[in-house]
Image 1: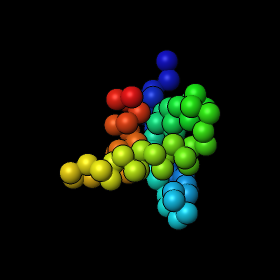
Image 2 (image 1 turned 60 degrees about the vertical axis):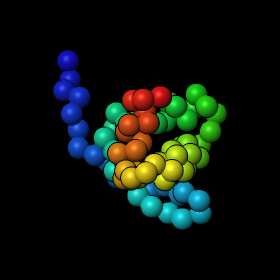
Image 3 (image 1 turned 45 degrees about the horizontal axis):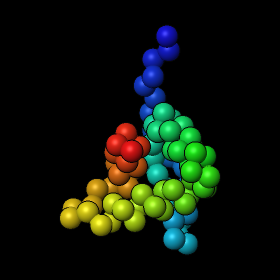
Image 4 (image 1 turned 90 degrees about the vertical axis):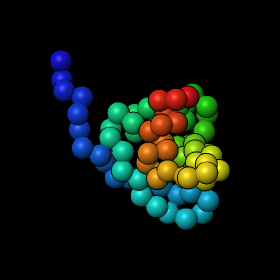
Amino acid sequence: MAIPFHPPVKRSVEIAGHKTSISLEPVFWDMLKARAAAESMPINALIARIDAARLEAETPPGLAGAIRVWLVSA
């Protein structure tokens, strides 16, 4: 069995008209792609939705952390 650990991979995304980059481990990128496909939406749109939700938190986490938590909580 292959070891599932891999360093984060940085990718550029566009949220609400501005570009940013996010570093996530490949397993989270795969999960994000699968969820976006399941919801018939582009990855950028799903990330924007997660971003909007995290900004409503009393103490908003970083975007990469919010994505990871959202993926394992949803």
